[in-house]
Length: 463
Image (cartoon, rainbow, N blue to C red; front, side, top):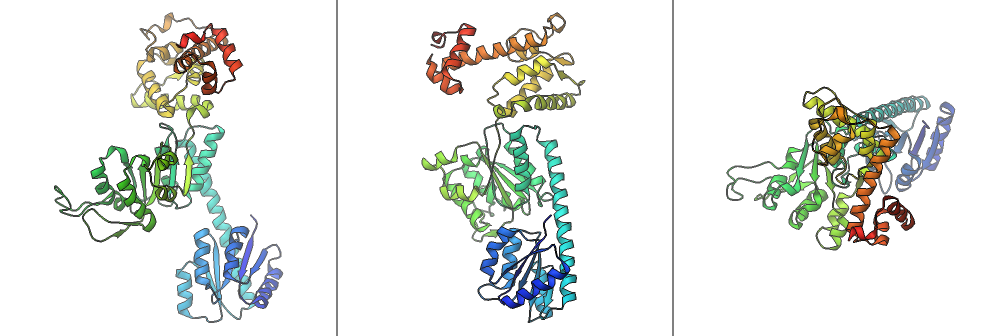
């Protein structure tokens, strides 16, 4: 850890004297001086100091205001305020505002060095605490988010970083990729973890009721409102509210939600007074919001309010190597839920699972594994069990009669079966147009033609 200190004082000679005093006691400490708060704001971003030592009385911006800016950027920053106008009231105000210590000019060398020594020790402890917390976060994510492909490692790193802040988050991804799990992980790893997590399935609530559910209503606001109702934002006070499928809400609700994001105020339906709310917002969607903005179905200003931090959940086709891990995990969970002996997947069955397209992503895989757990009578899941679940055979109880082919031969048969079904559907969707089929599949036209010749499939098969 590189230890750096930023000194901010509008008297250059005084600041230079502080640097000389510090160099004698802390030769390895990097010290930088700024003579104005505006200059210091840029230095905070660039330098990322461990300690901020700032004068209280300065033109343009005082030390308390600079401290608030600095702590807003880095809550772990250690701040010491300096002033020639020391008083008990000023010291108390500074400490309440987030300062770690307070020194009065003229500064004695021993007082300064003792103070800086304590500041650096605090900074080291805060850094170590953050490091341990990050390790714990990653360990927790390893248990909840199954997968170790590069895309999943990036996702876990992003979640851990986002959870440490309090900004609004937009989780984007295809249906079935685990957006809800990502949202709950952000809450679980954040400082709000002990407070409520409230999830609102926006499309599931009729538009005329969604406003009341989100913001609450007063007694008599509408027919049937016999008593006041607290909305989801109030219920999530101090915690996190997850707005699931935010892309499907009406323009009317979008307008009212915008005010919540801007001012952190909600007004219950039928009420005249707004209420302050403190809930972190995590929104999720599988919709292309940019297209909805262009078509006038989604407010651009709301999009930019939501899109402060963005997390994109990878589809299963981009993490095929995670399928064996996911399948084993889901199979174990299903057997435990149904109180069955633990089952396992044969290598051939695993290869078959990895060869499927899974357009429904992880959710489709999970549901498929649940069916396998129900219909596989033995402890070993074989490819013919998969075919039965897909409706391709009549019976799954003939396990003893099914011949066990060598691994390479079984794998080849399964991959050929998958390839045949894939290209037949591909040609059907393009009505036999080879060029269009190559474009949709991501294959070179020559490669696709070789596959068709090998399987004895012609373009006319798709017409």
